[in-house]
Image (cartoon, rainbow, N blue to C red; front, side):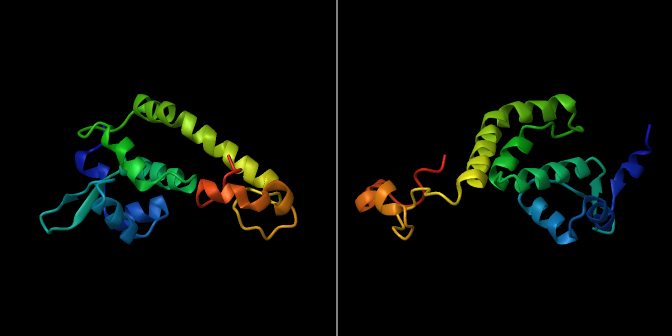
Amino acid sequence: MLDPDAAWLKPGQIAERAGVAVSALHYYESLGLIHSRRTAGNRREYRRDVLRVIAFIRVAQRVGVSLERIKEALDRLPADGVPGKRDWARISREWHDDLTRRIEELTALRDDFSKCIGCGCLSLVSCPYSNPRDVLGQKGPGPHRFP
């Protein structure tokens, strides 16, 4: 069993281990993504398990998950304990379909980006054939053929 005080780390220690700036810790905390305690000298300390939460935040952001959605997931984790394997597995199941869709979109982007994606730009040689009279523009702004 760890000494209860040994499980708490200073912001600089957490930032170094997590590969983020201390300002990122403060930002995540201001959004309610992570939490700290204050020492008698009014300095922040973070529980060591916040490292896993920060890793989760960074990886989720890297694949395009919004901080709002990340917060929704984190808000369902146990507030008074360390999230366990079951907690992380539940988030994985909840995000499975959305992540699969993102993978499909990225694959299509990689494979088909040089083709028309239905943006309505009318500047590509193929536009007169694939989007005559800019009919896709009537659907509104943005790409319409990209999954």
